[in-house]
Picture 1 (tube, rainbow, N blue to C red):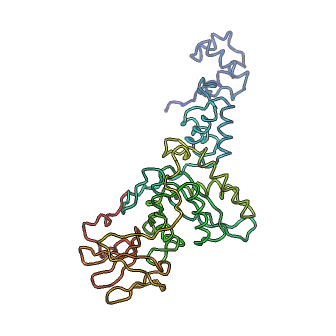
Picture 2: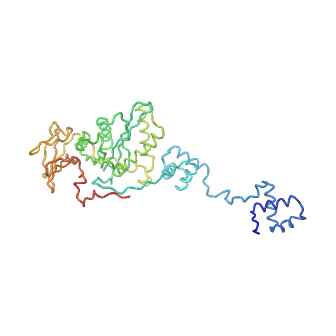
Picture 3: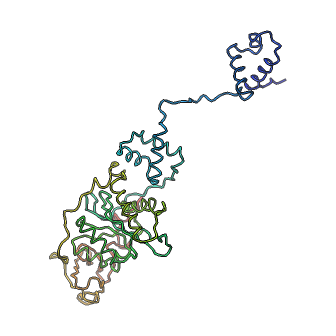
Length: 403
């Protein structure tokens, strides 16, 4: 016949039952019958007296106390910092509290506390796109490249008025130069914001934007970009559909703005009140929020104003001897040998250059801004980038980025 199977808890229960019956002359005799020591027998009798039959179950061997446990007051400080800055991770919270003179544990411990308190949601990691280069300027010093863009519009708390946040940042230091609440995303409103930024911080070498209005239009030129060229600034447009790879430093600010302001419920009823919120966000972003790309420094510690001051007079671009220069007419066209070439009315009165290339085509440019090409057959192509059909097999822009 098979062996009878019994668990430790059942055997302990049988031992207690025999002890309660009192038929054994002594505890020693009872323990000999069950094959245990007297010390063990007294232990289970004591456990039974304390907790009944439940006391006969195995107890957890986990430590009740740990010498390295973070004090509750420190946990409360970390949790309070997270509530104040709900979009900040463990690294930023650790650095921010440390600068305020708080005694905080390691970054990993801060992260574990936030996870334990349910304040961190594990985000699915997305595959990182490969590097993409198409002649963009290096962001290797302050004011080398400013990024500018509109954060997607949202309605104010009143429910009717739309707000278009315009942001301008320095690509090297991530310093947020402007975060303005605008009623309309037009050239006039943008020019006022840029004008104030130029007065306060000087001129950058390059301004990088997408291809939308008011930054670009027909032939990639707009009234705003013409103004920048006459100030001595090089307008730079990213490839369509590549905002995160070619202007990712600036787009990252928009994600923080979305989390800290819009998702946090800091949407106000009036444009003036919303601007006050943006001003507070900008001050915190520049002066308090640690940035991982800056070794946890704040953007204000890495930025300095430009030495290129706002000029008193605008100057049209000049061209070298290898350029053919044409003056744009009032209707936005130029007259070249054999034909009239329409460009853009925003260039009216401005000099435009054509330069012959090795393949017989001509580059059409307004100062540093390439408007397009004129093929050897006389057909104009808009934009500064060749189409896939025009690229040679060895053109590096044919390479597909890999993750």
